[in-house]
Image 1 (cartoon, helix red, strand yellow):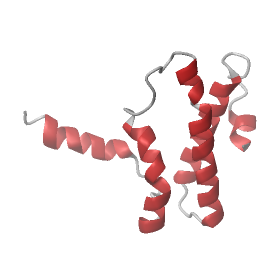
Image 2 (cartoon, one colour):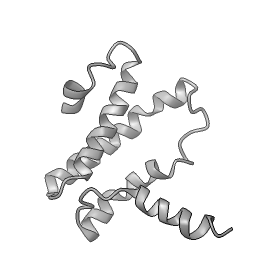
Image 3 (tube, helix red, strand yellow):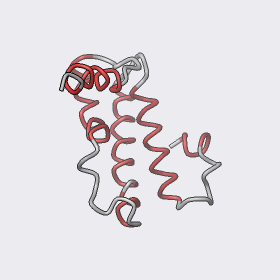
Length: 112
């Protein structure tokens, strides 16, 4: 995982290494998902980063930060569907879910 070596040395030693690995695998997933062109090797790397993220994030459960688990975090859950949607619809090309979230707030929540 190249991101751990390049982008996260500032965290090393300040937080448990599992947290550094969690953040690194999450960033790796995000960087891969935002590419304009995704080939089969990229999709395999995306799957690997997601598996690493799910494995390493358990430090947040075991350390008591999130003892009830991760089931109520919609954006983390959405990561599971990226590969399928990329295969069906193409690369998201930097699309951010906050766009649809802000439209949801405007269309559904504000009228009430």
